[in-house]
Length: 151
Image (tube, rainbow, N blue to C red; front, side, top):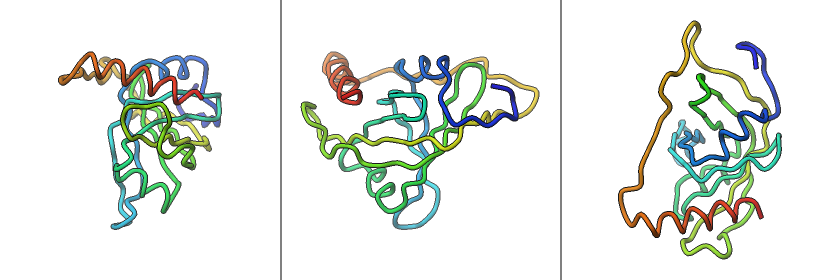
């Protein structure tokens, strides 16, 4: 994707990247204050070139935010650049069945994807995170959630 080119579908390369265990930022409009709200999320899967699904805790402010205003942006920092993926979010499953934690499955229908990295630079180190509590249980939960996102 060239720097100024706007797409409306996830490229195979970006889809593969997103389907890994990645940290992304989700921007929604806060339902109470009507101001931008940014959250870090990691349960993210590309379903098809025009759709991204993700899961959040049932008590997350994200759920109320997208119910009040479905417009959202997913920010992906990787593949040497920054992508802004905009669209409308719908609630797909509340709560998600077969998951040991109360989660909500959300789906972003993509309107646009564009590179939002500032000119003349590239990302040389991607954001990374590690689980710090109940690591084995976290891995089990991750598997359940990722499978649930694709159902």
